[in-house]
Amino acid sequence: MKLKDKMYIIQYYMKAYSLNAYRIYNSIPDVTTREFAIINFDNIMKRHILVRDFNSFKRILIDENVKELYHSSAYYLFPDKPMDQKEWRGADLIFDIDADHIDRVRLKEVYICKKCGEVHNKPVDICIRCGGTVDKVKLIDSEALNQVKNELFKLIDILIDDFGFKEEDLKIFFSGHRGFHIHITNENILNLDGIERLEIKDYITMEGIDLVTIRDPNSRPIREIKRILREKKDELNIYFSPNEVKVIRDILNRGDINFYHFLKRIRGRRGFIEKLNKLLLKEGSVGIDGIVTVDTSRLIRAPESLHGKTGLVKSLLDLERLDGERIISESSPEEKMTSVYVRYIPRLLWGDYELNETFNERIKVPLTLSIYLVNMGIAYDIRDL
Image 1 (tube, helix red, strand yellow):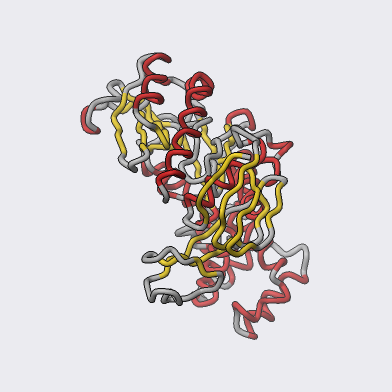
Image 2 (cartoon, one colour):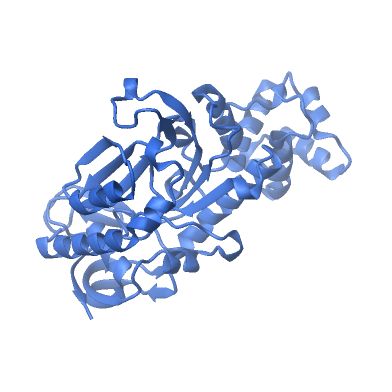
């Protein structure tokens, strides 16, 4: 990144954090019991930070050259002590849905040479300009977020219908980049240990689920495999042998059949069961980052803070007004337009701004998109208009 662009972006973050310090502080429950951490513009992390009050919080934002701000999911007696001395008092239950964990989401891709910075629009192993190594960079936009949103709704349904949470228990955030976070601070979950959280994660992701061990015919795994087989009815030959396809289609054609009893009957046909298990894992899972959910001391991006790559806010969402275009538009601290020189960019939809495929051209784009393109290495020289 050119120094001029780095200074421009630093000024943008400093202004946003200064103006929104109270809003960020006020959005974090039980501030004084959390561990805080920051990443500055030299990409150095500083953690084990205690926030005593709003004034100390604002000083951190101003004095530490903050790019990214995190707080622990956990509550501690001594947040600023080393991990073995903090004295854990409980933790929120956190879910992180990220496009990178969802095979069904297709992100736009560009290919950047690590040596000379040349940007390619097609997959290459070696830079055609200098022979250097090429990295693949995935780009988010509003269209991709709308795909990720489908996973979010699946997760919300599971948390409410299967786990019994109420909608008001769920705080749903746009992460500021490739997905969404759900924070649950319900007192009934605060003392769940890592093993209990692992079971929740496995239920949602279908990892380790074996259909023959399910004892409840109305359980989610049974409901999901029935749904998947119906939706994949014309594609069953991809997954199963001709004889297995015949058995499944016969079952599906008998609408009143109890699928649970069908599984009991084929329990001895282990190969058949394994194929069903793999299909359930592939098509029935929800794309969460399981590590985030299981970790009882996880550092998570602070609500209302800025994402380091996009300059967008981790913003609280209204489910009834949730679409990719609105998410990006309403998560931009400033709506002004800028110009930036783009080496290459595929077609992107950024909020309500549509950008066509562009090669080696100075273009007018929203400020946050300029920041994102520069941070991703495919543009430079941001200018105010």
